[in-house]
Length: 554
Image 1 (cartoon, helix red, strand yellow):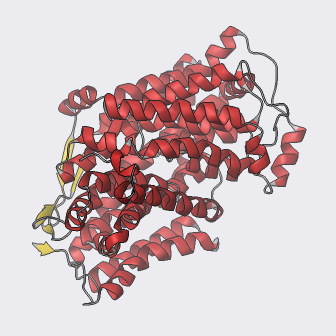
Image 2: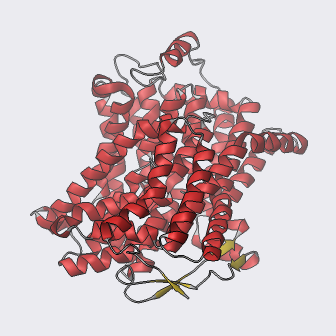
Image 3: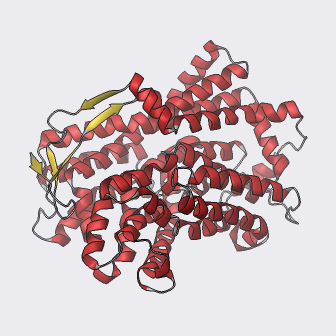
C-alpha cells in the first residue's frame, strides 16, 4: 500500500506550488499559441509524472500505470464520443442534409444571436442532460460551424453556453457521484444545486449573446433572451426541487426550445444580425457571410423532416443510452472490468481528504454497449442508412473521420492521463486543501475548488468525486451546511467546464479548427473566472446573509 502525501515538502505553500506546476504548465503552453495542443499535453504528462514520483513520492510503477489508465480512459469514453459525433456530422454534410438543417434553423430565425440561443444554449442543454461528457459541445460546435459561424464563435460560445446545465448532465451523473462520496441524499443535493444554478441559467443566455454581439446587440434581442432564460431556469428549479435530479436538463431544455420557437413566431428583432463572426473579431468571416447568405427558400414538409431526421434519431438514442435500466441490462450482457495490477486499491486516500484511509480504485470498465459514443455510432449508422448511404460509403466516411480526429484523440487521451494521475497521486487533493484553509471565506473559495476540479479533470462528476468529501468535512469543521458546500462544488464546477483542456480540444475538433486551442482558451478564460467568482459570491450570501440563508437545505 502507498498512502497519499499532501504536504511532501513540509510546507503547505511550497507543496501547493509543486502541485500546481503540471496544470499551470499545460495551460501556459496552450495559451502561448507556440506549442500545439497535443505536444503541450504530452509535455505536461511527462512533467506530471516527474512531480508525482520525485516530489509526492508515488512509486514510479504506480505513476506510469496510472498514466496508462488515463490514456485508455481518454479514448473510452471521451474520445469515442467525439469521433462518432464528428462521423454523424460528416455523414449529414456529405448527404446534403446539413444544408437542409441550416435552412430549417434559418426558417425559425435568420438572426445569428437567436440561432445561438436555440442551438448553443437550449439544444446543447438537451444533449448535456441526455449524455454529457463532451457531447453537447461537439454537437453544437459542429452545427454552428455548419451554419457559417466563425470557428472562434462556434467553439468559444458553445463552451460558455454549456455551463448552467452541466451539474445535471448525463441524467444527473454529477449529483449521483457527489452523493456517493458524501453519503448525502442525492435528492437533497440536487435540490440545493437547483437553488443555486437557476440564477445563472438566467444570466448565461444574456452572457453568451453579449459575448457574441456586444451590449447593443444583446439589448436588441433581450425579449427572446429573457424567454429562453426563464423557460429554462424555472423548470430547472421546479424539477430539481419537486421531481428528481435525473431529468432536470432534459425537461428544462425541451421547454426552453419550445418556448423560444413559439415566441419567435410572434416576435423578431427589428434589425437582423446576419454576421456569424464575433463582434470585433474575424472580420473575414463577416465578409464571407455577407457574400454567402443562408438560403432562405422555405423547406417543404418532406425536406424539413429529412433535415431533422438524424437529430431526432440522436435524441431518441441518447435518451435510451442515458436510461439506468438500459445501462443495467446492457452491462449485464457485455461488460469487461480490468483492475489495473499493482495499482487498484493499493493507494490510500488519507485524512483530511477522506474521513479515514480509503483505498482508491483503479479499474478500467469496458462497458462498450453503454458508452455514449457507441450510441452516437449507432445513431449515425441508422441515420446513414435512412438517408440512402450504403455500407461501403459509411466505412469510407468513417475512415476519413478517424484521420480527421487522430491528433485530437491523442490530445484528449493525454489530458485524461494528467487528470487520472493527479487524482491517484493526491496532487489534486493538495490543491484542494489550499482552498480549504481559507476560513470564513471558505464558501467563496470552496466554490472555486469545484471550478478548479473541473478545470483539472474535465468533468463535474470527477470533480465531485474528487473534492465532495473534502467539502463535507471542511464545512462541518467550520459550522457550515455540508449540503450547501457539497452542492457548491458542483455549481462552481460548471464554470470550469469551458476552460478544461479536454473540452477545448473537443471544441476545436468539432469546428475543424485544429491548432487554435490557444485562441479558444484565451477567449473563454476570463469568462470562466468571472462566472465562477459570481457563483462563489452567491454561495457566500447563502452561507451568511439573510434571506439567502433561508434557501439552504440541511
